[in-house]
Image 1 (cartoon, rainbow, N blue to C red):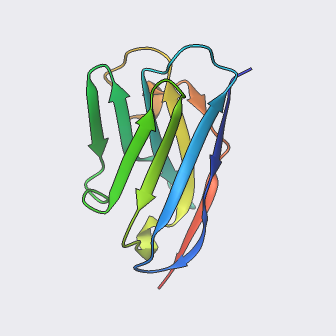
Image 2: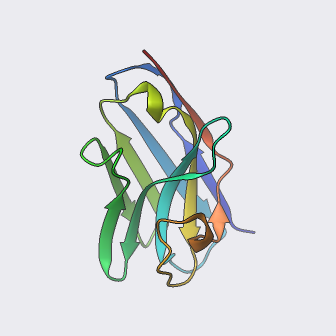
Length: 125
């Protein structure tokens, strides 16, 4: 059974940095893409960033572009999210997601097949 496990969340102050990591276990083949979504209370899952290997591309939500950096290792099915200059509005539960097949919906919840349990990020002002 495939599992995505996130780590690295926590409580920080505005302006601080955090690094989230996600590793997949139980999967033999490389994912098509891996990404991060977040969810705040009362809101739907929000796209944050994604990395795709065929072709090799990265995408970011406008709200995090320039502050967050996504990186991944295709052969190891791992992905990380370096978050700098965090803002209170960045707070939420961050979910790692992975697509098992090619998709054009890399910015959308529906584009991903496997999900982690989430890791909490809290940013105090």
